[in-house]
Image (tube, rainbow, N blue to C red; front, top):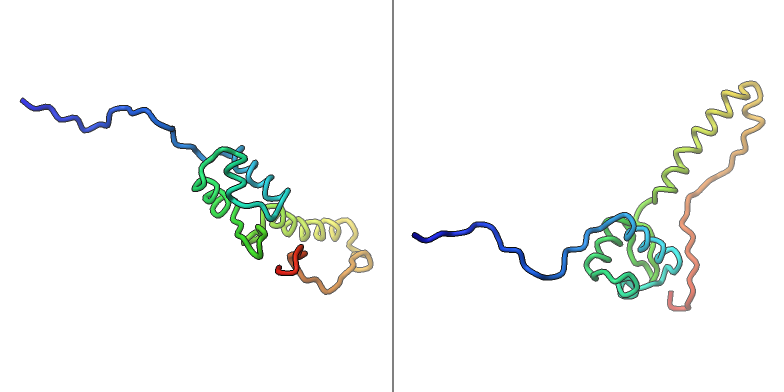
Length: 123
């Protein structure tokens, strides 16, 4: 009688690394400190795989390289929170000062732009 096993035997080797919030925070901190940092430099400093750094940068942090700098693809969490708080603050101001609300409100033409300061002539 021949016996077949359907389970793999345990093997030695490097365990798979898991993307944890601490590693994501470290990658984000490195990018915010130096917007021109390379992915190679990030994975060398943190000691994680190149593929894991790429996954964190593009999927978890949602940033991309633009003119040699890492920039967000969309609004980040702080920018989204700030945009939600502004209307709430104005409605609270209206509730407190209904009679003179318009005299307290300052308006202007507002445009949301991402500030980009090139550091080299090529950029």
